[in-house]
Image 1 (spheres, rainbow, N blue to C red):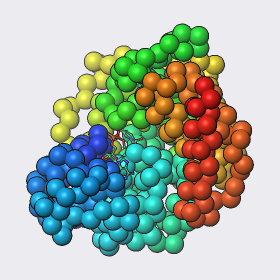
Image 2: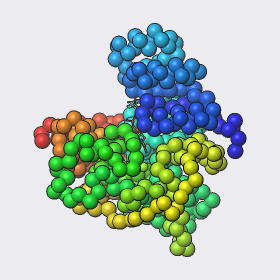
Image 3: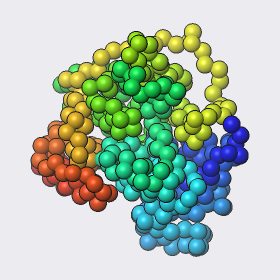
Image 4: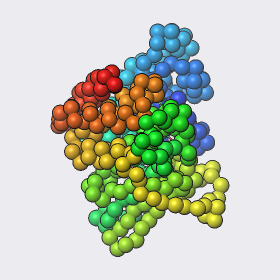
Length: 384
Ligand code: NAD
Ligand code: MG
């Protein structure tokens, strides 16, 4: 493929881990950046705005000081509030990379698909919380939904050219996170620093804690269910500490396809921009003989959020939105030192028991379930 065939980019969550790596890819490929969005009007975002003078800037939740400073430096290029991000994702003929963290990314994901754009989705919470709504938006708007999450990019690459009817099983790999091998009892005393020390990937704090509890892997199971339209019974998880095999697909004839490579998010980010084609990347030639690859079953007793997540996925409708929202509250409480590591699962489980199941037809329905779950989870945090 020719680089000139790539659509210009709108990059949401531009200051984060995904955002930084996406800009790296865009700059290297010479793709125009038409929009940059983040939560705050930080120095980081100002620097990006200066480096990309052609880009419009959207800031979801600036302080009044930040707003004054951004207005003075950027004038009419900058807009504020969540709607400014939705508008940015709605402009026609762009690739929207959604690297926002949390359910806050849902409205922009829906807007990108309704506008018929390619949505390169890192913001897995969009699909977890609003799977049915996002699928509707894709159908109505004709947009293309391409995963950035490394496991789902791997599965998409294994499935390309295959008939989905011929799939027997998806196997998502999990690094196991920094707590792999610990038993349930010793997990109560895990510190924030320990939970943030991921062995193979460098990511934002929320997903790093979710990797330590295996919540992230349950989110990815739900993400795979909605992306590839497959039932939970055929989506498996295996722990693979080296993060070299990014996931696998087993077919009805007994063939198994795996996707391998160095763990570097710039590869799936770029693939989401070029799919179904490829462009040269920056990684050195892969050395198979330098690898020792091992696989083991996840410890479902020590990391109960994996099965709690499967169960929420099977219940469907608003249950995954509740799962995600309660986890957002619980992870923040853990990072703030208000609850211990093992309490994250108890709070998520408690919220799922207490918040009633609802149909999801619109973004508003998702926001309602999300808000209910946040409120219940916050109460549960407070009572601990
Ligand atoms: P991060 O914390 O490093 O960055 C988050 C970004 O989102 C920041 O730019 C922040 O300003 C922005 N943001 C936060 N709240 C917002 C809001 N309300 N409105 C608009 N912008 C907002 O997170 P990250 O690690 O880059 O992860 C981003 C997403 O990608 C998450 O959904 C995560 O699960 C997913 N993901 C990340 C990785 C990775 O390697 N980092 C891998 C796979 C998937
Ligand atoms: Mg992943």
